[in-house]
Length: 309
Image 1 (tube, rainbow, N blue to C red):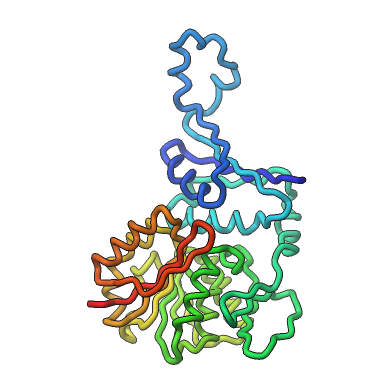
Image 2: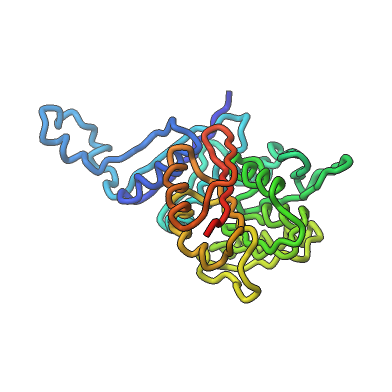
């Protein structure tokens, strides 16, 4: 079997955060950290330490995972980049693929991306694939480009499934961390009246706009925002909020949800790994949002909250 190494180089002070993000995808990580090598010099084994290790950069660490040929390494990269962006690590890290040519990375990943059914009706179809929709299916055509959100990752599937189940015609919707725009487009096709989709990354906003246009969706407004800081509230509170981000960021934005929602509003969150679900739930409940539904896929949780006061 052929394996691809995905290596992230980071500052020592960011190592725990980088490891936490990458462990969401694979617990079998290889970590290169020489920051405490000086401690070893003071032991009886100090003289046995290789000179290359002694001279290694002690201000940076490297974290690697190995992806087998059956999996799409592009999904891994986009997931990691999205989470690093949310944590403010994007400009502090370097991501490297070893064993894959740049041209392969740009093009060959498409062979992993095939029509995917989510929930009961949603079909996520690659932009370059021909697909004959069956009766009742809602087809969303996607080209994730350089933005996270092809529909194949568990977090996206969980959010989309909850959106399909609870979206009602005429809802005013806010999509936070829109990425490729996949959830906003699903919301439109499931009957939302208007959707405001935001991301901190201008590239993601551009990709989301392009994907909305390619799906002939005209009620999605895309913009750049750091979480809820710059969202449009001129039209009033939102009936439905979707956020496929990470637990820490969901917790950070929770107090601001009160400003953009109303009694009865629904909030759909994903990107929550099981061990952090309790923290997210406690934070949301402390701000007036009760649990309406929980679904899971592997170690991931998709949680629907309802504003109860």
